[in-house]
Image 1 (cartoon, helix red, strand yellow):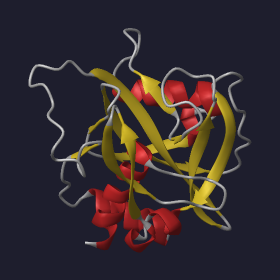
Image 2: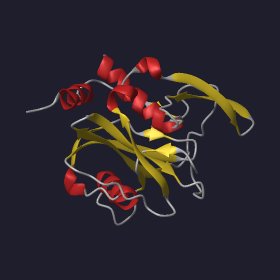
Image 3: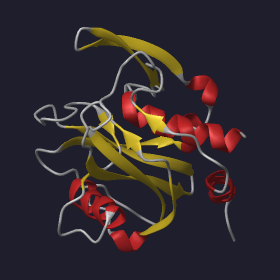
Image 4: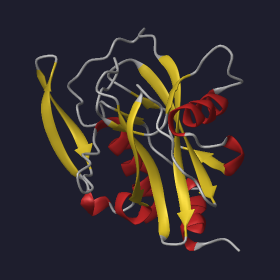
Length: 199
């Protein structure tokens, strides 16, 4: 029997989706037409727990080159040895948080998201059932935590904030949860799904 959380996600993923990028709220930023984007993939792992569905997120190590200390989905660059973006997302997730790909049921993808750091990120939505004990990857992940699915699927909890980036103000979505400041690409991707759930 499909639980309400799963049913709602499957319905949302069947609806049309708009584009997604770090530049959605910043139309004045001019992007080069011939820019080269590096392929990456992440997993929006929705853990179907008895106490309620939640999204598994990570707090990246402050020592990383890209997005240090930020809240992110597990994932990373697509390597030449990966069969494709989905394989990369599952491999990176296993490496970063210890989640066995056999425990993940991929039910769809979200729009490819362009980041300010030059990545084209494909987000995969995967359901996680059963017991799971996160194992953060040393040097890559400082913490693994779960945010209630209902929290990130409520558009009213999102705000638009801004900060300086390369000498200009850049606007972005944020959806804080407790001590975790979820913002930027992660919040934008989640917000896109929230809009489809509410449609």
